[in-house]
Image (cartoon, rainbow, N blue to C red; front, top):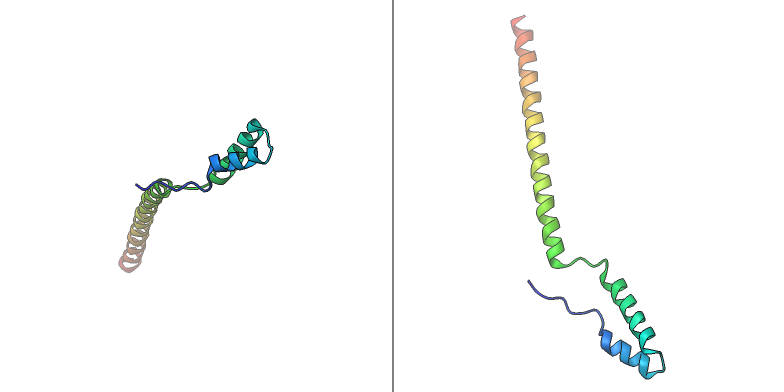
Length: 87
């Protein structure tokens, strides 16, 4: 698994803010808020792999269910036709 590169350098951001006169605590709070906003809703490769596996399992279950339903419908139609022929 590969590690994602950070979207921005938090330490450099804090330094830039403090160098321009922003209080260190405020600079850290701003940096943390931006980091959370940028990374909070981002899916990782691992997240996508898990989702892909879950979707494959779900799709497999749907295919099996449709197969059974179709087999039942064919059996019902066959019995109906045979009943009609044998009168």
